[in-house]
Amino acid sequence: MSRRIPRRTRLLANTVGIIVLLVCLFPVYWMISRSFLPRNRIRNPEPAWFPTDGTFANYDRVFSGGTFQDALITSLTVTLMTVVVAVLFAFLAAVAVSRFRFRGRTSFILTLLVIQMIPAEGLFISQYKMLEGMSLLNSVFGLTLVYVAVVLPFTVWTLRGFVDGVPRELEEAAMIDGCSRVQAFFRVTLPLLAPGLVATGVFGFIQAWNEFTLALVVMTDPAKETLPVWLVGFSESRSRGVDWGAIMASSTLITIPVIVFFLLVQRRMVSGLTAGAVKG
Image 1 (cartoon, rainbow, N blue to C red):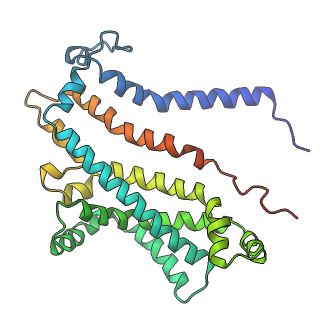
Image 2: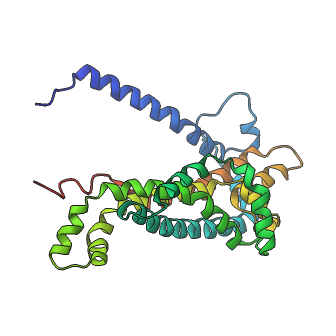
Image 3: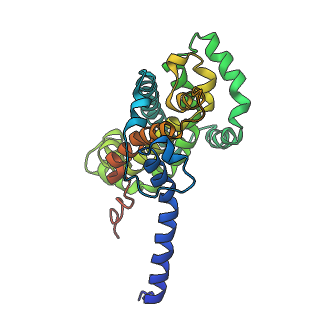
């Protein structure tokens, strides 16, 4: 018999949760509200909590020149390619590690952990030389290749846990009903792995979208910059000081694709799809 949580405890927990939520949301609100304020209002010592005299001038300065649009296209292309390739290869590797026993399996798993411990900065020179040798500098394909190598180890490790969580009995039952091993996997197991595929895809999307240092090293051509690199150059190109209004506006625009992507896949991130799949 489950023990009922006291009302006072639930009220306290809800209050703490609301406070934490407000603390996390306040920087986002501050960024969005500053993006609609004129320059003189942003520099005012008295903070303006609500942009009652808001303006779109900051967004006009972001879109002027067309460099933001070019960086947006580059970031979207690299990020989507990274997610698709990384999730595909991670899925195959996770299935192989989880469902099969082969020589070198343990070494492969340990290698994934060791790779995660290596600082990214320690690989910049070798990565740069590798891409330079293949003539892939300032190339969307070259940056995608590096991003996949960065995202893949954690993605494999995460997906392996999801594959292990799907009971083997489901595949065995499908094989008894006449399916081959491949058919049983794709008809029974694969749909149950959707939350894991989405979760790892979201992780890869956020990591590739926000990555700065590798893009700064690989994409040296200003016309091939990703959004994080473009934002730094945009903030430094203001001769009359830092244009905080335009920076807040551009930062707001950069967060929109991540939010849209998450809203599109959030239903699949609900855990527990396998609950009750195996009984008795």
